[in-house]
Structures are given as structure tokens and as C-alpha cells.
Length: 305
Image (tube, rainbow, N blue to C red; front, side):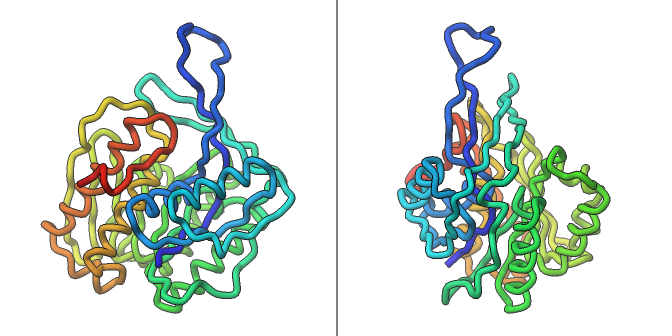
């Protein structure tokens, strides 16, 4: 069982119309949120997965739960509340890259509380994005990360930096550094790395057994604590947008590593460059499928065979 903890929200994605110069394109609501997308992607790939969050009881919240159930994601750790669902308004560039404006004041996912325990058989915990920024829920997610790492659960952290949501950059960077001893696998984009001001060499010295970097249309790379390195190019695809691509990488990494019995520090460090190349190539294929579709629509296992 892989547990994914963090926010779910509704992405409002601009739609292309016949009038390409329309000042206000229509916005299509799509289920989203980095952790939510990761959980859905894991379910579609066939991994046993549970989502851990607080979800609104409004119509958007019901739709989010429906998306989880359709992907086979278990929801026993989902808390419910009357607060509204968070919204993210996407802006898609000509190259398919996405930026976001967030509406998250007083929303349900910010009021997440630490669950007493994870399900029996939980092998891995994945966290990241807005959930580790916005209080009071951020402190509860942080406590979950530390508690499960101390229990020996494999942990993946994807900070997925959203600068507009971080009021004090230096304080966040210090907090991020404090998480690293509790992280097994750190995955982040090269833009995240630049904003945080670190490097894989530095971060593996502070905790994680491996760091995976995504480089957009230049592919993915990894460096382990023992100095093993590997890289793969991106898979060429006609890009609709990049929404959910990084979340799909998270899921693909966890899914493939689970299949190699490598969801542990020892397991990660047992992988040589050739094995890591295969893991990264699988993640690149999965991300390419997501990029070929509008919104966060990760692939099913059958699409990657």
C-alpha cells in the first residue's frame, strides 16, 4: 500500500476556442492538486493506494472523491468538512507550460488533522505541494512525514514550489531543510531546485537516499547518496499542456520502484545506473502521455505496455 497525503482541488483550465484571441476563454473544471493527481496516477497504474486528506462536502468535493474511486484509490483516510474546495486557475503558455493562481482561503484541505495511524501494510508515503505550505494543515502533514519516517516507512517528497503561496521564502527554505532527514526520495523540478538554492549532491548529504530532477523537455535525471547517476531524455509528444506531468512522474517512480522491491533506503541504493535508467524511462513515458492530454489525465497501465 502506498499512501499519498496532501491537497485535492479543482483546476480551472482555459479551453481553446475557435476565436483564439478571446480575452476570457471558458474555464473547464478538472480534478487536481499535486497529491491528488499522484494518487489517481498510482491507481490507474495498478498500485494499491490510499489518499489521505480533508475534502469538502460540496459538489466539487464529491467529484474529487468520485475521481479517486474511479481510479481504484482507497479513501479510508479522507476527512470531510463543510468548507469549500480549493480552486486553482491555470494559465497555459504557447508551449503548454502551466502557471496557477490559487484560491485557498478557508478551504477544506487546509484544516487537515494528523490521522492516528496509517493502514496496515503501508510501505510508502508521498507528500508535497501546497499541503506543506498552508497552515494549519501544513504542520499536520509535516508531523505525518516525521512520524512515518521514524517508523521506517519509505517517503517521497515533491515540494512542487508555488512561490505565490509562500509568504516567507527564507523560512520555507529552512523548513524544507528540516524535512530532508525524513525523506527517502526527493523529487523536484530544476526550477524548484533553483528556487530552493540547492543541488542533488547537497541534498543527498542531508538525508534523501536519492534525488530525481525533472528537466522539462530535456528529460529526467537522478543522483543517489552513493554517487550513482543516470539520465533519460523526454519522450517526444505533441504537448497539450503540462498539468499533472510532475505528479505523474511521482506515481511512476513509486510504482516502478515497488515492482523492483526498492521502496526502502537499502532498495534505492541497490539500484545501479542501468536500473535507474529503466525507472526514469518509465516515468518519462508516463509523463509524456499526461502532457498529450488537456488537464491532469495520467495514463493507465495499458497505455504504457
